[in-house]
Amino acid sequence: MGLLNISSDGAIRTITLNRPEKRNALNHEMMEALIEAFTKVPPAAERVTVIRAEGPSFCAGLQLSSGGLQQGAEEAVVRMFDAVQHYPLPVVARVQGPAIAGGCELALHCDFTVAAEDAPFAMPLAQLGVTTDWFLTKKIMETMGLVMARELLLLGDPIPARKFHELGLLSRAVPASELDAETDKIVQRLAANAPLSMRILKKLLLKQVSFYDGMDHTAEDAEVARVFASDDALEGVAARIEKRQPVFKGS
Image 1 (spheres, rainbow, N blue to C red):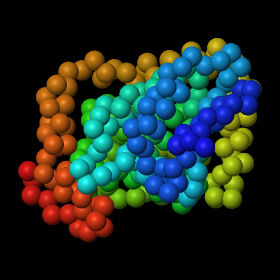
Image 2: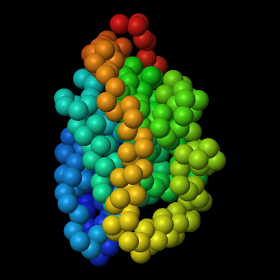
Image 3: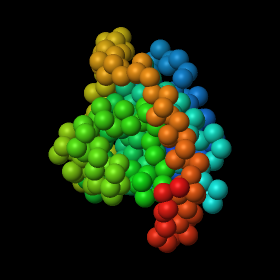
């Protein structure tokens, strides 16, 4: 069993994050494997992909170390989310537990997210001294709108799946005991649909929200890079690993 397990059963492909002892935090190997899985041409029989995870957590985000994020992680995570979002067939996330930072973004980049109603979603980046980049912020805005984006990003506190669903941000939020059945219901419906129709419909939906993709954001990219290179970023990550309150200095 690897860190990422992929199996296919006719129309349904299942991708399982398999690092439960690390709350399925994404390291470089896992991200590259996901990029490969979502940039391959789907076989003719495939209709839908399910992303699930072993253990009590869905995904705790990117792997942290005392030196901050792994080298190349920022670039890899953008490529990974872009590959998931632009995969030509529907992608369904089954979220049984915490979806934090990159785990929250991974779920939001799927076409359907079915979650246990108590599963927390959070983007605690400001608590770590880091930030989203242009495209990941854009995705949150597309999904949530400005008010919820502010709450998710600027506060960074966990929000239960049931609230996300009430606000129209998730496909389903159900009791944990019903998670598999509800996920399977959606997956089977998608598997029965016409693949050509789903491909063009997904492409049309993505095109509708691509207006800001070509906007220049060079200055913002430089600011993002400055945040990731800051002393505050190193302090925030170190404090999280050491389970203490960070002392931020704004530098």
